[in-house]
Length: 211
Image (cartoon, rainbow, N blue to C red; front, side, top):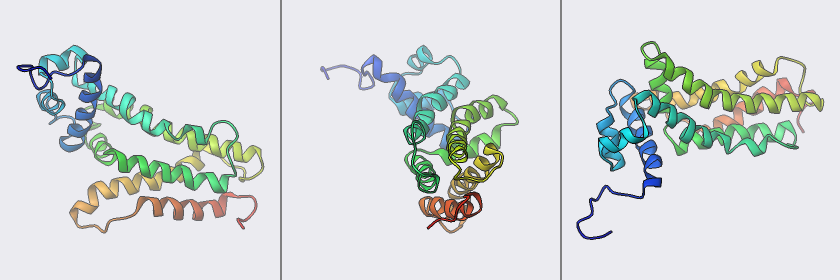
């Protein structure tokens, strides 16, 4: 960095990513209504004016966080589902554990809590989060169920309802970690939850018992 150059000045191409990472942290910490663009700009190390170059409104910024930060983390699991996945009994615990890893790597719980708490006043953020994160994770599980049904591994039934049954406890586990643990609740291991839950539910889903 040259002498006298402002400390917040960074490569132009890097700024949007830095702003989104900062916005994710601020939204998770303060919520949507209380998050100020000035706080996000300061955390990203840019001026508020520079932030407006990339995002006109706070809703635009949240949409970008959901689609450009959260969604790609979920999509990392896509290769496990596309193509020729392994047996359902082997793949499903891996997918759920992958979701647990995403929750560890980024503040999914804080954003989920924010969306639930503020969706009545800001319904658009709920729609954005559902499409970018929840539906992506659910669609992969549903796809895996459908593939397993075609191969005769999983019993007949609505694949989406199976998907919701598999994903639901993981969402609950993320929320428990975010809401209940700070209030004195016992911590839970999301990876153990993923393994145990997948095992219990698959006992009812599989055509043939696991060996």
